[in-house]
Image (cartoon, rainbow, N blue to C red; front, side, top):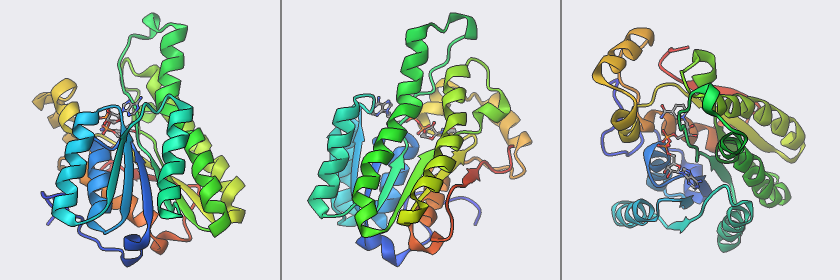
Length: 262
Ligand SMILES: NC(=O)c1ccc[n+]([C@@H]2O[C@H](COP(=O)([O-])OP(=O)(O)OC[C@H]3O[C@@H](n4cnc5c(N)ncnc54)[C@H](O)[C@@H]3O)[C@@H](O)[C@H]2O)c1
């Protein structure tokens, strides 16, 4: 079987994840929803935030019924640093621990380079980069005393490919690599691991609705080594591995999930 499980139930099971508390940003839709789903199926306690309250509540209700896992959803704008930090503190406080942070929220809004103004630039950095740093800083405060934790930052292959009209987003995502390597060095002494997951073309509903025509998908499949559609659960399977103690020797790295696109 080369395609992932259509129900969202991951193929791998990591026993230690059932004990862990996980925080996911941007978890209501897209890859984020697949991440929340995958951790819930492992029996983890999952807290997630998103701007889209309707989708977040619907996902929480559905997964609680399907998996019996405990989930908490809060509507938070990740560009509001104080609100984001408060949500992370609440998730950690509630369970008395925080084991995994997944910095997933992003916005890949397109704009021609010539039209990008200072406010557009700052907004792109806020939603694609700044929150990753402050969420990591908040998570580390809870992880350090327990000398354990895994922080996952979502990067992107877009800056290697030169996707048109994505300069601000791609610049922010290229910086995720530097952020990840730096934090891994800083916090390795606390046994807190920091890795990046770098997706290629993951054909979420939003990508298919906005950017990926059937012709574009054929082009992508021709460029990938693996000629199959990549979906959010492909990314989630990597996140489970990096969140689990089975990857306890891995930190400071980019884990590329792109079917060989780059
Ligand atoms: N889909 C892809 O092909 C692809 C490729 C490379 C990298 N990525 C990365 O993977 C991650 C998920 O991608 P996706 O395609 O599911 O993204 P998406 O844009 O479809 O979803 C991101 C989620 O974040 C939420 N969000 C956006 N702005 C927010 C804010 N200010 N506060 C709180 N929540 C907010 C959205 O509501 C959505 O639920 C992102 O970091 C993205 O950059 C995706």
